[in-house]
Amino acid sequence: MKNYFLGLMLLYLILDNSNLKAQTIDVTNFGARPDSFADATENVKKAIEASKAQEQTILNFPKGRYDFWPDQATETHYYISNSSSEVEFPVKKQRVGLYLKGLKNVTIEGNGSLFVFHGKMISWVLDDCSQINIQNLAINYERPGMSEMTLKEVSQSTVIADIHPDSRFAISDGHLEWYGEKWIAKNHHAVLVRPEKGMLLYSDWDPFLKSKAEKIAALRVKFTGDFSKFKGNPGEILTIRDRYRDYVGAFINRSKNIRLHHLHMNSMHGLGIVSQFSENLNYDSVFVEPEKGSGRVIASSADGMHFSGCKGQITVNNCRFNGLHDDPLNVHGTHLKITEIVTPTTLKLKFMHHQTYGFDAFIAGDTVAYLHSASLQIFEQGIVKTAKLISEREMLVELQKPFSKALKVGDALENTTWTPSVTIKNSRFEGTISRGTLITTRRKVIIENNVYYRTGMHAILIENDASGWYESGAVTDLTIRNNQFIECGFNSAPDNYIISINPQDKEPLSGYYVHRNIRIENNTFKVYDSPLLSARSTNGLTFKNNKIENSDFLPATKTKPAFNFVGCKGVKLSGNQFYKVIPPLH
Image (cartoon, rainbow, N blue to C red; front, side, top):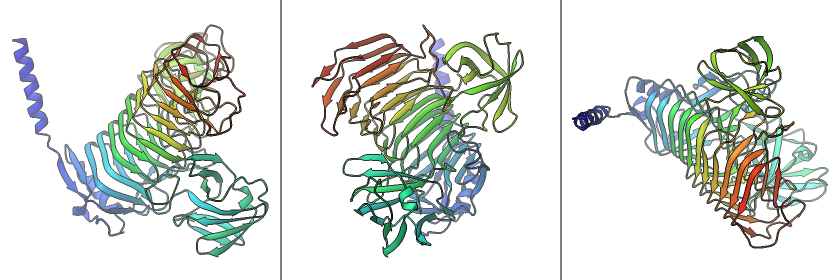
């Protein structure tokens, strides 16, 4: 009888779901025309509005090119983690091409379309949304925020370079200016790309700023000045951007059950796809890389995917990252510093990093961890009763119960409710100036079957700090298996460890370990230098059944041992195969 009623309930659910047949809303019915080069922003906005009346919607874009200008775009006001400071971007107003607010059960079907954005815009925002799919489309900008030029001739006094056609420029009073649609680059940051080696190296635009620029052909410029310290060679590509992250590529805020599938993110202003306080995110076949055949080498001015304060399950599968001025993938929370103990249950907290502030880091019902900033020791937990922003930089948080006398001004709070489980698999990380993957979350993490190819710094970095970036928190269950690590770390020698576990416990506490239960198994490391794994303040660290092969990719410095363990416990090394002698354990 029990099974009978269960069967009836299951049948009812199936029939009930079948009634939720998705209604297709075609954007062309609202005036958007593919391949017309006309501004589709207002027409698409009307189509999105029409979807609010449906229980389940497919927002359909017949295949073609759709252009979006900021003039008719929705103006938003978001504080976005790791983006910009008050000095860099004081008023957080952003124009958005596709703005979805409070929607659910919507699929944006691109059918292989290309969305081209003009000026500075966020391509899409999902705010307070659920059950949203975005699939089968490419994102690009008419004038990417990144400028690129290929070096043709280099001497101590002159440089001749070919400017990429997508990089608008002008010669003014003998100086080159990079500009776009209603913007000009003022705060230059340069990275040198060696395409034949897949390497990104730190460089400098300052010699070019001080030089005399002369256009000697339509897209060819001769710079005359002091280039004695410039380390560029013919055939290499100098990439230049404004270092201020005033915009992001896409923004997902306070949303859940979001799926991105088969997206080509060919260009993104500022930070990449930022997911903030969102839940259950499945990103499959998302390719952060320049458009094939475009001749460009950079896709994102900063990160590829950035997850701040998320929860539930994050899955990144079958993705590629190539051509980034920062980390392809970063997962973390945010520590807030205690600046005042107002009452036995009330604290005043402050956002400390200049690029991260202004959002609700805590809400009622969240569980928080109290920790000493210098040691990162978590010594107590509490539950939030009320929380509110009292300024851009400060929050007032009331806890359900009084905290102990162990808590002091200068300590920090971590939101442990908003910490995700993470799976990163079958993906490729390359063409980045910095790290491949940054991960700090207390829940289960699996990193498997990926390729990390010539990342400029550590392929994988595990930190946690309450003194610098204030990115939380402790790792408690991490498996790194069946990956290939190929010639990584060339920008960080002599600290060029392929995997670095480096919590910022400035004052380590005897017997306390920041991270625990980390397993590194069955991976292949192809290394040109000795450093493999560095770890500190970790309890339970296994490095086993890995293959280590030597490469002659770069000259080895041999200044560091293969393994470096500081303040660790329960370290196990076994079954590893070394194909060449390397320095011993330190």
